[in-house]
Image (cartoon, rainbow, N blue to C red; front, side, top):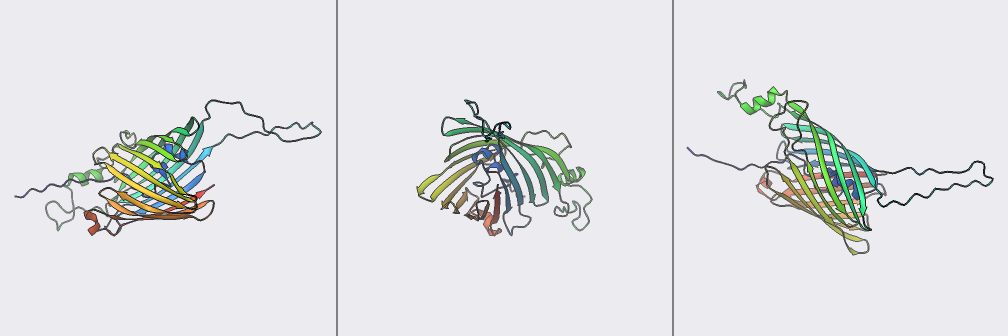
Length: 319
């Protein structure tokens, strides 16, 4: 008798390569990095050609909540003119951001649809630094597709399955899915060029709606992002972004993106995930409002024998 043992590591959350443009997908506090209101879409096909590979579509939007300025005038004045009253000086000027996310993720026989609401609050620290905190709250609907998860008969593989596999039977007994809360907390420190952030998401949230299976029981996830923009020349900026992620039972994930922006219109660069993948990123600002981007990555481990790489599309419209 020969006993074989493998150490298996899997991801529970989608992996994004163009996170430079959508940092709020990892940390709700990162909405304070950009004051422009926008709606973005990220579509990713990971491990293309592997079979039942992860496919993700995410929509994320945000806006800065601004206080309306009232215009006051005297209708009885012979010469009427509009004027804006001066606001009282305050030591702290709070900035508020609101947004949301809709994420559809498919991987093998499992898929989920998640809808979240985001909120972030920022306050300046001196003349350059800004501190912010964010929260994300929503619901996730997990589902199990029996057509893509076929189990052979335990006693005779030639006969239809009638039970006996404990894990598979557990999924079937839960009506192929479960509804559970989703949440995240994030903190951020930033300047015009430097961004530091950390966030904790998903894990430890009790399911108040329905008993869930062990697979749908989301684990604790935390991530830390560090990014800095270097101005090399007029119209040429280079921004590296380091992303470190950890799930409670999986090894540390280290990712590095380096993006060069030319004339504030075109961008391109490289992406690398330690012991996982490497690839390229390119895009352009079509107009003052519309941005498009594309990323391609290939596996740098044993999966490259079975996968033709991953593809990711990015679209964003600003208001």
